[in-house]
Length: 87
Length: 389
Image (cartoon, rainbow over the protein chains, first blue to last red):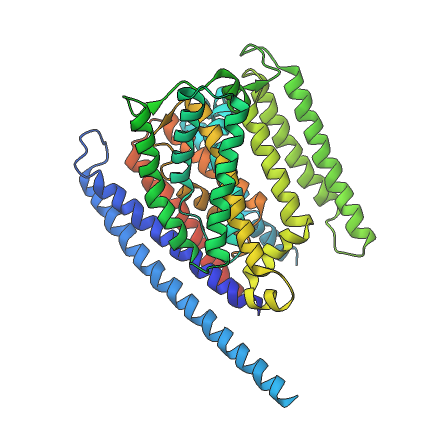
């Protein structure tokens, strides 16, 4: 039973990390025309795309973890209802 | 069997090992610069807000992965109000600190009520604060200052939150500071063995004598190292006392009190917690009230260090606090998290920040590295879970 909401907690945390990576990609994009930066634009572009793609992958993974946790919770509730109706 | 226990120990202490390796990496890169006494002081002063906000964010996350997005913007607002109280209105430091704490409590009560009793999702409730408070803080600063910032804060306020205890000249060994470090190290060793004795007496599993001696010895050595370096840099910063006090209090709360255990139970399964008689609404309320109060304390350390209140203060603070919890907590226990884990996470991020600024690394590279660290922590957690299955 404890693992279900831990699954939901994990998915929330993974989603937060994904949001942070998207925010970092956005910050890099905002600094695209900054003359003071020493990061080449090619490298900047690489990391913008990389972080955006990884963030999307993590969001999908987080959603799947959440879905599994919710499904297990439903099954557990149904099992408990069946047990109480037998009594 | 021996291999399994070694790999389990490595996994359990993964972030601590990473911290040591990263420190050694920057030690080489900065040619010893990161080991200087002033670097230790800077690490504590620069990252005090991460430890303080991290403790609050951890309590929110324990309730089920909930976060507070408004803490950074709230720091800006409180900083502006603090500036108005102490600099513009000339109020006494004590009264101003009390007012700031009361405002923090007021916000925490309102936020906690909305989340716990009105059932507004935390990320929506705190997003409103994230969007509103910085604008409000900036407006207050603009209305009270031509430059858009308020400075300087009174010296007694700065000495409370950015001073030193038993101050001495830099370069002169500060013996009171080192003696305090010795006391703290002795306390760590004593408490470790005392806890071991209590566990054995109650019939619980406990570490072997060698393991307890090793762990407490390493902890004591770390404390002595830090205090020895601080002793060469003029003494213990008052910021460290605030951080250490908060960490000790929250370690105690999360491990030894009923309310602390309730946070874990609610995060584990809210419905089961409710059915077991835990007042889940009160736990959620307390989590966000607590976060607001800690944000008020963090604000005071930050504005005392910068000696001014300005519009950009608090930017990305919420992400730093979340990163500390995720890096230190998610990897260690798969979502549960501990105060010690958060401290390790915050220290790791602090060492990386300090190391990167000592080698004058471009801000964009710093952002990339911080993102990669967070990503590595999550990937490690995901892989650990898959291997565990």
